[in-house]
Image 1: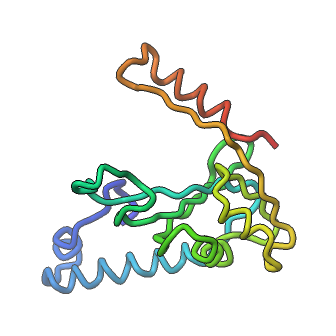
Image 2: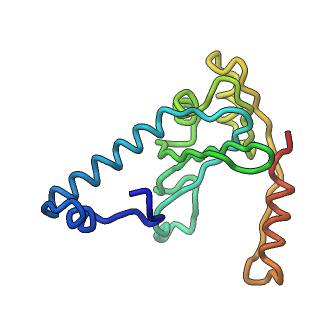
Image 3: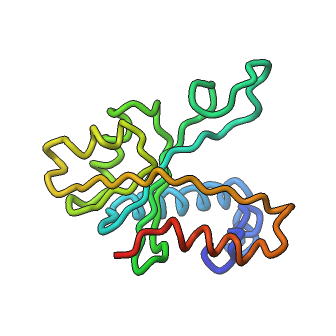
Length: 169
């Protein structure tokens, strides 16, 4: 499964191991679950940048995007070391109130973590909880946008945006 960035299909596994498709499918799902369970054991530490985003189709007729719609809430955390991302997690959360991110932080973050966010109030509330006695919450209120179609040098502009927004330790 790890020798191809696109993964393997159940048909490919079934042919390789010489079993039926249903057995190959079962093997594939067990391997994926084992890999996910193993990744769930690791906790991010150091500087961790967190944010939420919303997955789902268009908001039909509401004219709204993101928060307040019926789209799926996803919390992402990226561990930053020497100005570069090293590890990350993404987890579906019920809502963006303080309880849902706190539960994820307890499972996914080390106690000595500097939490960097866009200023969502629920992250600050999480940083004040007893379980995070060493958790520091730093707010970056800068937002950066870059119109890729209009940019003459999108790679350079994206690198500059990344360089400006990643905290240096």
